[in-house]
Length: 187
Image (tube, rainbow, N blue to C red; front, side):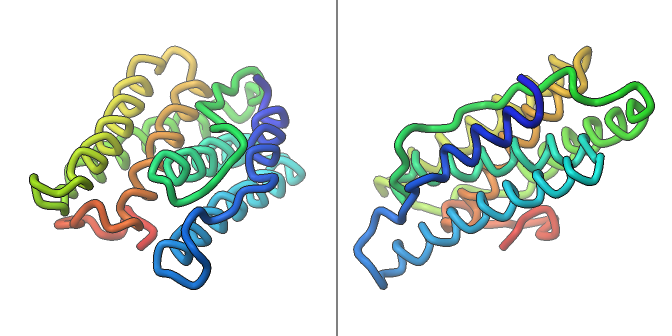
């Protein structure tokens, strides 16, 4: 999929997205934050693409999709269907290869660092404990997938950005205690 198609898929996923909880409750507010984060990254991605910055456009689209999908999986947001991983490739020109290589590697390191900086917050007896473990597992899976896809840097960056969106959304939802490297999260 090309980056423009990935951004279109994110925009489509955002159509009709609403917080799931009753209005004015803390979970309604959190659902609104999830939607706002996904919309912000959709807008950023579009702006980056218009300004001929496909590397940041790709990362923005995948990260926004991760936020929206995690919010849906947590029941914070009602969406028509999950966006899913946007494996974008073939959109970054050869003259941008150095930037792409640097960013793909950096995002793997950042996501790995973020995963190493959290502890699951809910007690093991809480119904939220397995939910936090699932979010952590999704982020871990996509971090590993990003490493495996290093031969296709665009796909690698798509994976790490998407997984990072899941983890960041879980942190914002209070499922994790950030015990180190707080700067790696949008709290």
